Length: 126
Image (cartoon, rainbow, N blue to C red):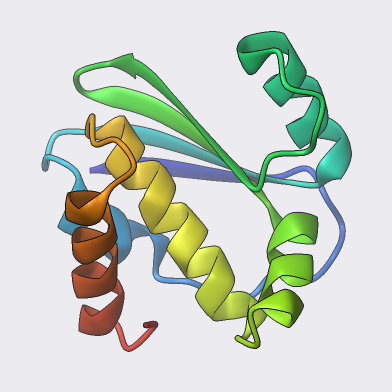
């Protein structure tokens, strides 16, 4: 797996085992770009690609069967962590795994929820 992580925000971001999480969810020969962003970029991309006006917490863009991009909104993760009484690290991990599973082709539902929990438990992030 080749993973490239870029930060577009200066805020402190919780550490995550990005590559290990991605290896659990995606094929071995996958090229993944992760952009850690804030509300502004997340809102802009959500509007451009999904015609939604809010700042998404995570956006996944499959580019091919072996390549994709994930945009993680750390500002949204921080707000949601507070709302759901969890740590920012755990919320960000859930959003990242959620995005990975979308790249894999899964849609919202029981199968996706169960796989998210299984992967997060394996890293003690559930």
